[in-house]
Image 1 (cartoon, one colour):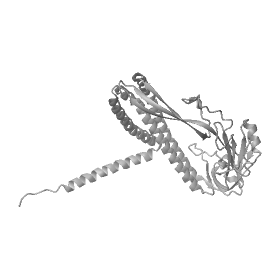
Image 2 (image 1 turned 120 degrees about the vertical axis):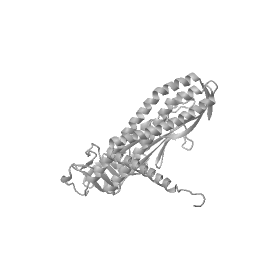
Image 3 (image 1 turned 135 degrees about the vertical axis):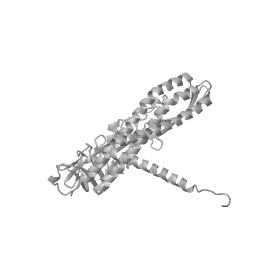
Length: 395
């Protein structure tokens, strides 16, 4: 089920977009410069906080609360027991002994996919052929069909109920109390078997005139679940269980909290499933910090490239008066945008490093300079060594 639409765009319309790019592009580049700089600062501050925390953390026994550790950064491991039972108040489903309960709701909906092919036309304009296709899928989020190209023929109803998560407020770890959501985050998920009573709760909650049936772990709101129709629902639950956990946080009375601040003002709170010692937990946190740093660097460089490309796009648009010339210029501006990104991006990161890690940055720069000088020196010596005088004839 698909249809094709052909649209044309004049050279003057493209020129307006190019002029807009001259305004938006620099703003995007400046934004990415700020993002890259902020990211380096965030990374350094987190690294220092974790190093400081690893050096002062106190591993304690979970069997008793020592007042001498009040306010200190402590590490505690052991069996965890949720306080209370997570329950879905709307549908009356609960999970005895679990730390968390997830309600998953999917609705059968129309999904629009589109693919476009654009060709340049003589005079600088362009022609775009777009193919729209429609299919039906189960989706956990409502899809807004009002934005569809053929919205009148492919309408999605409102979702009467959506997914949600319910966790216990607290859990106990020996003599200590920890945050229930933090414990649930560490749990493993497993399906919840539903009782027949839940059908009445679903009927009252969503007010549907469609038949409602429960099949073990799934509730179907459908005339025929084998051949679902648009607007049909399927609802299931999963529980989050965990037997043992480890935490690093501030000891406040009998609580292990997120309130511990290092000397640079960063909060330290770590959690892990199972019995994990403090050094392992801090190593894992450092690895996570490194991964986040590189992901943000990648996003910043990509955004910077897009900004430069927008700024330079006007050149390709002007050249599009002759289509093949515009293609060549467009390729050239993309290459220039990449070069500018590869120059400015690392430069911003390097400057941020000097600002946040002056000693390490200067040491790296000095090592690089010494390495370069050493290579030049060795190359010169090698060149001199191979210059052996040549004598023709006999003496």
